[in-house]
Image (cartoon, rainbow, N blue to C red; front, side, top):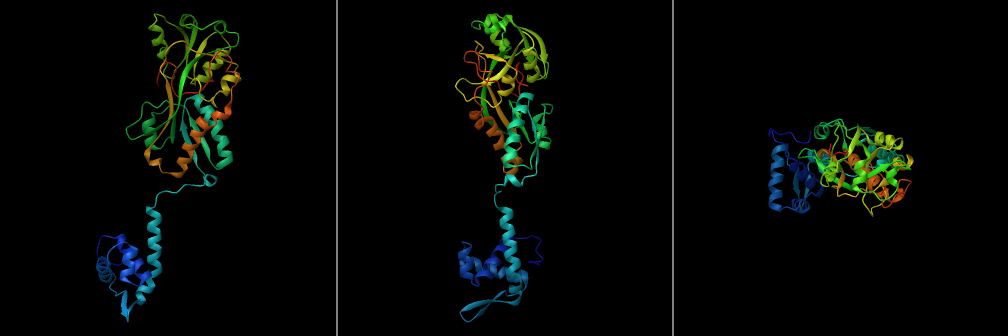
Length: 340
């Protein structure tokens, strides 16, 4: 043991002072090293002598020399100070190549599917030891983040605990998605024509109404929702096989194409601007603050940012970008009928 003292309190400053004194062999130089006064360092040396019951440094002419006990403690004192420095230093960045983590994310199906593809590509290049578990929106995000059941929630973040950290990633809008050759693709889309069509609603809570119905009601119009489905992918698939209209989140006009366009394009859906003022949507990510400084979690958050932002520039337009100014389809952790 470095310190054998009857004192019940362990003072780390004593270890730091002891290391400085045994390195410098001088009260004055040790004081300068620790940015304190020689008088204060002299008092600390006196305390160390009492604690360790040894003179530690003794006068030899104009110099001070260590006692045998001090010589024996020199390396141990230096080790303790290095350990304290490592313990109390800010977290350092990690090498993604060395990560062996399994990250659990919660997101809506369309977001999860697109994230999985982008995250796997990044992990393959940067962090081959990382794997992902992407679950549906089944858990209350706040408690699940707090309890560690999920590492990150990605989607429309509107039900978080006060301590939860939230970062907005991208703003979106809703557009109408229809099959190729759908009657709504002929001629301009008006609120009346949109209301007259039969619709698919996406809601994991089974809701039939949402912001579109509110906007239509302001013009004394009402739409017919024929079926409510719990997932965007299921709704998009049904829309390709029928004259039903589904709503999908899309990039804002002028924004970079989304990396989440692939599913709409692969299904051959045509996206139509909705001629109504609908509230904007924001995709973000939420995490518990205990992960904020963690290097592995920082890599995860940065990877999600790059999938939803940086990679958008490389996505390019797809077959979904075929009708007027409609933008590419994008996933959203929110019902098309309103926030989940």
